Length: 589
Image 1 (cartoon, rainbow, N blue to C red):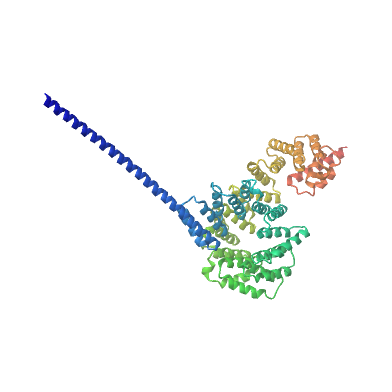
Image 2: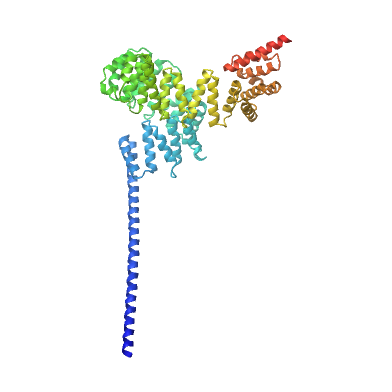
C-alpha cells in the first residue's frame, strides 16, 4: 500500500507544481499585457504631447513671421502665415489678432469679426478691447464701439489709450467739445505721443474759439518739423482750412509744400490739383496731364482721379480720358463704378446702359444692376428698370453694408422712395438698426410726415424703452394722430413725472391732459415752466393751446410765437383750432 500512496503523493506534488507554473504564467501574461497597455498609452500621450509641442512651436514661428511681414508692409506674406496658423490652430488668438489688422488695412469689414473673436478669448488684453473699439469706429459702427468701451475696467479708463478711443467715439458722434477734452487728457497722460498731439491740434483747429485755433496751429507747426508727422500735420492744416473756407491761395501754398515730401500720397496730388483749379492757376492743365499719366499705374489712383473729375464737373474731359485707357483696365474694380457715375452725371443713359449691361463687378454686381436700372429709367424703359432694381435690392439684402452702399447710391440720384424702402429693410439688421431708424426719423421729420414718424418711433421705443426722448416723442405723435391715445397718455405721464423740469415732456403731458378735456390741469403743468422755457416757440405753441382752452387772452401771443416753430401738420391744425376757439370765445363775450 505504501507504493501506490507514494505515487499519489508524487502525482499531487507534480499537479500542484503544474498549477503553480500555470498561475505564474497567467500573472506574467497579465503583467506583460498591462505593461503593453501602459507603454501604448504613454506612447500615445508622448505622440500627442509631441504633436501639441510641435503645433505650438510652429504657431510661434509663424506668428513671428507674420508680425515681421506686417511691420515691413508685406501683407501677402503676413496673410499666408496667418492662414497657416489657422489651419494648425483655428482658435489661435494671435492669428485672429493679425487677421483683424490685415483686414483693417484693406478696409475689409471682416476685421470686426476677428477683433470680436479675440476679445471673446480668455487670454485677451485690455488693448484687444480698445482695438475692437477702434476697428468698429473705422467701419462707422458706433454702437459696437460703445459696447467695447463699456467692457474695460476703471484701471484702463485712466490710460491714454482709452481716452484716445473715447475721443474718436466722440468725433463719430459729432461731439467736438468732448473729443477735444478726451484728446487733451490723452496728451496729458502720454505727452510724448505725437499721434495724440496731432489729433489734439486738429480738434483745436475745429474749435470756434480763435485762441484755441491758434493753439492748434502752433501744435501743427511743431509737428511739421518732424519728418514722420510733417505730411499729416500739413494735410490737416489744409483740410481744416478748406472746411473753414479760408482762401484757396493760402491752402495752395501748403499743398505745394506737401507735394515736395517723399511721403506725399496720390490723394495729396489730387488735392493740389483741385486747389490749382479753384484759383485758375495756369499750371492746372499741365498737372492734370501729368496726373493722368501717373494714375494708370494703379487702379486705385485711376479710380480716385476719375471720381474727382466727375465731382468737380470735368465729366467731358473724363470721358475723353477714358477713351485713351485700355479696355482691360476699365474692367478692373472699382473703375467700372467711377465710369458709370460719370455717365450718370452726364445723363448719357445709352452709354450708361452699355457699360452696365454686363461686366464683372465682383461682389458688387447689385450696384451694377442698380446703375443699369438708372439707365433704363432714364430711357423710359420702366418695366425693364423695375426688374433690374428688384434684382439689385435682392442682391444687396444679404449684407447690411451692401444695403447701406445702395441706399447712398440711389439717394444721390434723388430716388427717395427707393432709399426709404431700403432703409426700412436695413432696420431689420441689428448692427445697423438704430442708425437706419434715426435716418428714417430725420427723413420723415424733414417731410413733416407724422404717420412715418409714428412708425419709426414705435420701433425705436421697442428697441430702446429707457430713452425718455423717444418715449415722449412717441406719446406726442400718437396723441396728434389719435393712435392708441390711452397708452400715449400713460407714456406722457410717466415720462413727465420722471423729469418734470423738461419743457418738451411737460408740453406733451399737458397736451395729453388737454385731449382728456382737463384744461385746468394742463395749464397748471405748463405754468410750472420757467419764462425762458415758455419762450421756446415749440413750447409756446402748446402753452397757447392750453391758455386758449382756458379762455385766457394771453393765449394769442403764445399761439403767434408758436407759429415760428417747426410744426407738424397736425400741430398746425391744433393751433388753428385753438385760435378759432379763442376768437369764438371773444365774440361770445
